[in-house]
Amino acid sequence: MFLSVTKRLLFPLTVLLSLGFSCAVNSSEVDDFSEWLKELHTEALTLGISQATLQASLEGVTLIARVIELDRNQPEFTLTSKQYLERVVPSSRVATGRKLFSEHQKLLSRIGRKYGVQPRFIVALWGIETDFGQNTGGFSVISSLATLAYDGRRSEFFRTELLNALKIIDDGHITPGDMIGSWAGAMGQNQFMPSSFLNFAVDEDGDGRRDIWNTKEDIFASTANYLSRSGWRDDQTWGRQVQLPDRLDESLIGLSVIKTLGEWQQLGVRRADGSALPTRQLPASLVLPDGIKGPAFLVYNNYRTTLKWNRSTFFALAVGALADGIVEY
Image (cartoon, rainbow, N blue to C red; front, side):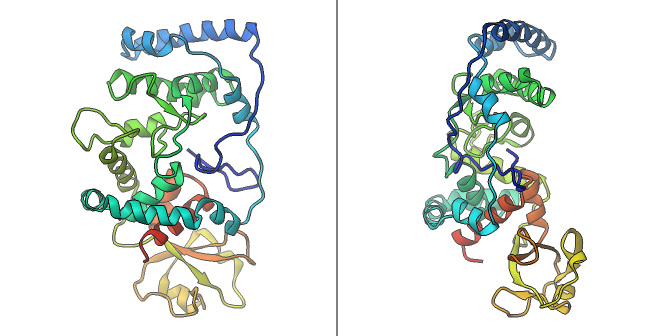
């Protein structure tokens, strides 16, 4: 699930649960959609998806007007990074994260060692995406993806995701009725799109199903596998907030500039409390999400990896902040 952090700012499901849009779908659209579904059915058969799966998955699928509205009328917010973090990483979420981290520590430790991902980041992503599994969405993934694929604005992308979702059902991981997620088709407690599910979801408990909806082993391992295969390093953190010198060459700002911590130290950058930067010579980039007058962060490889999960500066900072709150680093 991708978020933008310009003026058009999409929130995770934990924040943006409902918008109340409504509109009608006219009869001609229903007829056209029925014909479109027949063509999709034919294509899916050629890809090896069974007739039984297609009948069970596509029977009763309808256009969802609210999905179209949500896609076309995503709300615009102008927030600072501080305001975003206050909404997405409130103290209550940090407290819940600590509790669940402790509750599942044995499982998380095993998965963390296996995949090379610190457990606090697994829990942080779980918390930000779905409030630790409490808000996973209430839409039929098949109907939502069919609506978006038919609608035309991003039809190719969503058609591919719809076919991927049908393959997931055909492989026996979930039933059509239980495949519930966000309006955009993101599924389960870690909000994987169907393509991410096929690429990264794991059957950690060995029952033959990759169950990111209900099975903690599969949920945690799938998150860890995504990060691990995307370049995560378990020997370093995500980054840290820093103090800048009074004068800074603004051409140094951004992910395109990478310097070691020693080089940043020489340029006058310090920890948030004013003390020296760590002596380990990690490559780091300087990120200023609100511009030169806002907070500054030196970010490492794992921050960049988080951006592969979600291309949002604010989101990646929130994951780091929640992980740091769950286990002080």
